[in-house]
Length: 246
Image (cartoon, rainbow, N blue to C red):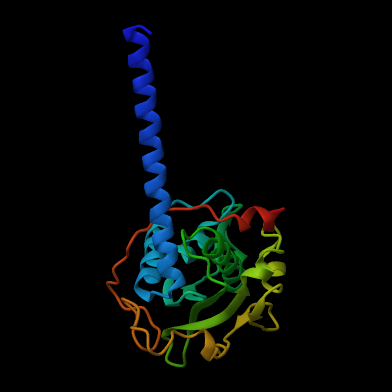
């Protein structure tokens, strides 16, 4: 074997060893985060979720997602998260477009709320690394005027979904039909728009375990406080998405 061949084999061996080392470290990192989630480590779970929320806030809307819906995605706030359950709140407004030179409403607040809720469900179920919550709840608010004329954020949709049910949903269908596949609370008035709702009670078994410390940036009422620190985590691909879309 001449010297050139020996050097070539040495370089190949070095590259293969380097790639194997990187893959090993990445796999170990994924196992580390998944173990923390399995142990219901609320700080780690919050870090994973807040890291993804911050990442989504910097992204452009995917193809086919309206600016109004993506505004709701970027306005989301984490209320509660543990190994089994995530609760998120956001807002939705009617969507207007210029049609034939006039501002025309093309979607009601409830239309936007439905589409935003479905978008968030799909993202939380399938796009969050190393974290697979069984149940996701999305509460969507819009602005109503009170007797004094002031605008008050008021809930118009509460959507709770189970991962097992989500696996059989056609995520490409109309949001209004997908919403009714899950546990949805909303009210329609005579004009076909949303009326305010009373949010459903949160089941005790889904709440944070009492002897666990509170999540970073979340107070005892389950409301996200300002300035919550977000901790990033490595990305993984959720295998359920392909089966649910198949």
